[in-house]
Length: 247
Image (cartoon, rainbow, N blue to C red; front, top):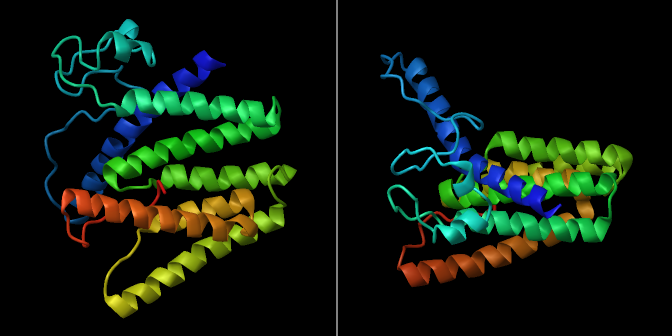
């Protein structure tokens, strides 16, 4: 179990790094087509599975013995073997977080169908959390996958009833959408991205309406505390955008 979840953590690192690159390339192509601009010289954009793992700095392929979760980072002392560029601490952090949360879910739920969905829930949220921290982006492909998985799980009433899941997902999305629209009309500012609406809707599809107030209140409080601390320590202005998804 430990080796498997560490391998999943390594795969999540690939998703966190490559999915935003894939989306930006797709959006750039769509914009150029819409504006009838000439095509740029073709650039190789990695997919989730090809090419094999490489160093972003020197582009050298990473052999599998340099890509063992947690172990390789410690042996290489957090640096690329070829160019000695620093490897972001995010990589072992994601792997360790995946391991710890997956083992906790296994202990809590036992080996059953609920555990399968709980693990998918955890893994998707880890990827979304770190992508949002890095890019201030919650990809639809992950948010909507999370929402549909919640609805599928609750066809078996694993976390709540299916009618509650469907109605709660719709209510969660609409409540944040209406709040931000009112906020924009009053202040003229965009207070939250659409990805946050979809993530909140996904939580509704998993847990029903009873947990939504707690999720929104606790995340708002944590986000406010962390945001104020960040702005104070970095001396940024209050206009600095801060990702809300991780909270």
